[in-house]
Image (cartoon, rainbow, N blue to C red; front, side):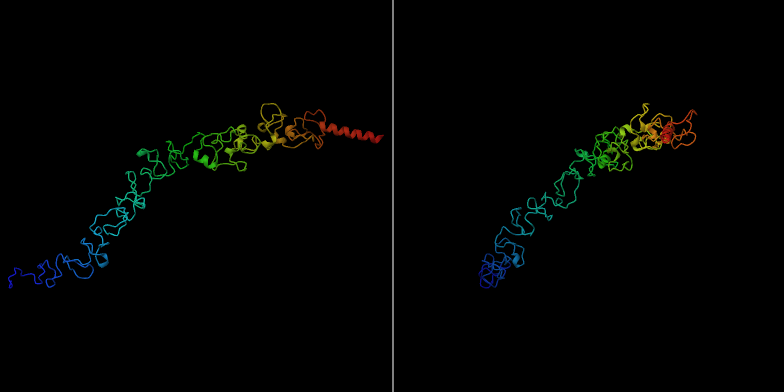
Amino acid sequence: DQNCDGVDADQDGDGFIVPGDCDDLDPTRHPGAVDVPYDGVDTDCNGLDADADGDGWESALYGGADCDDLDSAFSPSAVEVWYDGIDQNCDGVSDYDQDGDGVDAEPFGGDCDDTDNRIGPGAAEVWYDGLDQDCSGGSDYDQDGDGYDADAHGGADCDDTNVDSYPGATELPDGLDNDCDGEADADADADGVIDGLELENGTNPNNPDSDADGLTDGEEWGDPVPDTDGDGAIDALDIDADDDTVEDGDDGLGDTDGDGLPNFRDPDDDGDGIPTAEEGADDLDGDGVPNYLDLDSDGDGVLDAAEATEDNDLDGVPDWQDAGDVGTPEVPPEGPTKYGFGCDTSGGGVGVAGLVVAGMVVGRRRRTAR
């Protein structure tokens, strides 16, 4: 201290010594001096020249990190106020994304919980933990999204992994309990056909006899589902499945002719070669058996199958309906048969048709004689 002023480390005489004085050769630079921001000179010796707001952070425009160097409330060390539209902490992140998961909070975005970065659209849902990780808005207890919570968590869905299974669902032929009634492939009307198949084919799953023909849907069912007469209506919806003019309930499940077809599917129920539709339900011989089930409809002792639809006596009535027909194949007369000449089967005379023709011949001879 050659000049005996008591200061030996203040060369510029500004009252500040090194190391506080950042430039001891310039009396204008020292702690407390007025700094001119952004001039490249640290006048106040605080180590910063681009910190106009004095918050300790240099402006981002000059290589620093302060996003607003005119307001000391903005800096990387500032406390962020979320959802006010202002980036106080200068992190460049949306002011509406507090958890930093890249998705803005509702209602600004789709993040349903902006305080947890594990929750947001696209996140993997963890079912039954009470949290909506993927922000779908659906119940966390409805994994299959069918609108019904799992029965294991207070709901009524018996299979929360199958969207086709829930209370009131259509029962399908899949071996599962779709409607959650406790039964797989339920049959509500107990007709032997599961509800799903009935709905698929148009029959009523709550009515065992959808076409009201006297036979249950199950009795008229098959695999494939039959349409016996090919009219476009399956048997269970067709009151006359074989189109024989006799309703299925009247035809019944019996097999009169033993051909393997139940009568309601057999167009010739008694197998006599004459269609049921032609024989009809009348009872010609009054024996209590309708013609279409009677092997001898006219009761003449000759089977309808033998008489068929011929009209041997030319009276306009087919032999199977005509108890007085002549010359049927089962009772062949002797001699010529075209007009019934010859003895009858008892050997006692000429057939009826023969008498008629003989009379015509005699009359013609008398007129000729005159």
